[in-house]
Image (cartoon, rainbow, N blue to C red; front, side):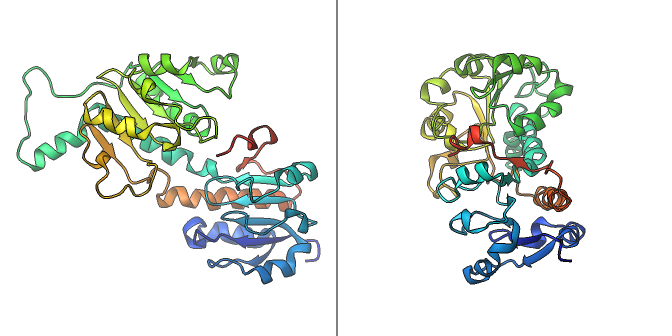
Length: 336
């Protein structure tokens, strides 16, 4: 027992039963000596009393003060969905001393990608509009000249960002034979070509794609990157799927253009959540609205517990973690 690592399990913000299947929580308890392991936030007096012996902290966000006060710390595993804020966690010390900072973001990839595809299909085929027509007695059968909407098959698709969400979405699009263009200033063009996607500038992507998926993570540099001028490049037969963060879009311009019928859209994320009751996005035509639920289903939340348990087992065995996303020194300064 003396050789077992001690791990603070302080998932405040998420209930243990929501993110851990019973068997995964048991794997965590089998791998290490667990300190706390309750839903309510761990009091400072509790973690301060064990800080000198703790090897890892599983947490919703970093709230434990100076990380230097944890002399044996090997890893911080966050379970909220985004890495700890650099203003609260001393990343320089973590990188200098080999403390791994791990994010559960990969747990959400499959669920977000699945909803992104569902929203794109629902938008391009006018599924929601037709449903509303049906419920109000306005449905049309055997359309003369064709039903509203267009196929996704063979349409040019644009990805804004080619990180984990894009890598989960791309295989789902494979049956549709869509040529994929990518705008991602963090990735070299040659690397993207090696993945059989076409690197392009943002204006080209917006003008030439018929379905645009916004998949980029927020950074200080990309706030409002898809601005009014970029949105004006969309054609009337385009669908704009906002699935990662609204941070990267001029949301006021997006709302205005939707009211003008410039293009169609599906939106899962908003600048303020929930949007206020009279926000004009709520009544914009040609848009499908989703209440930031892409990654919040129980299957995705249980993925957090699964990959956390996997990496705790690895850390306990002296092995490198493989499933959670490791925060890198080269990119931490770009986190918003």
